[in-house]
Image (cartoon, rainbow, N blue to C red; front, side, top):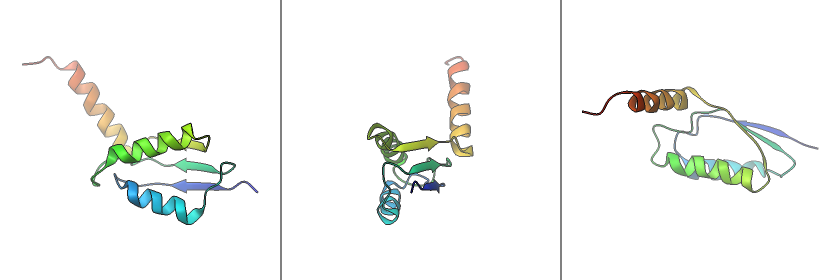
Length: 86
């Protein structure tokens, strides 16, 4: 039976994400729905993003939604691109 797991608010904590994935014993037939907030607070946001990308590359069913922290970060990046350098 295929299962659906909703995971949110990882906040830069890849070790905690790994622990959670171990606990739920996710199968490639299951669907992982990430609810955003991968960034901010924790020490390794890049590790969280890379892990989610690698899950998808490893043929896991992954849906990664943008959370408010990602929206703010992207808005900041767009603003910096548009502002002239001094």
